[in-house]
Length: 135
Image (tube, rainbow, N blue to C red; front, side):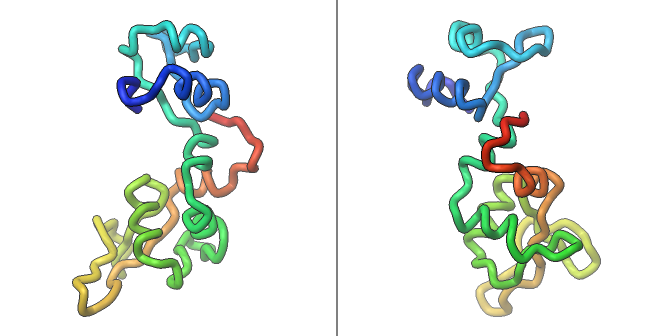
């Protein structure tokens, strides 16, 4: 996340809520005040809790309900939701052979040719209890 686009007040709230964190040059997590005082050379890293909080209700439902044992998302999930999850790295499209594809393969005529599957990151976010503060 770019610090230039976020007010100091909002950044403080995101850090305090543990949606983001910042490491120092040695790789240790900075405290909120230290992160706010830093020059911004170190990137802000979104936590699992932050990813969970950023999802819409439809996206969260898609990641948690009706997911097959192989991680396949329900075919009834609308394409805007699956594409948004894929853009966030929480889902990916696979062809019939299991190869990863960039999109669902819909050319406007044929419909979906590739199916959406939850990624390992998507599974971690889906399994996160609502009040968990894991990074």
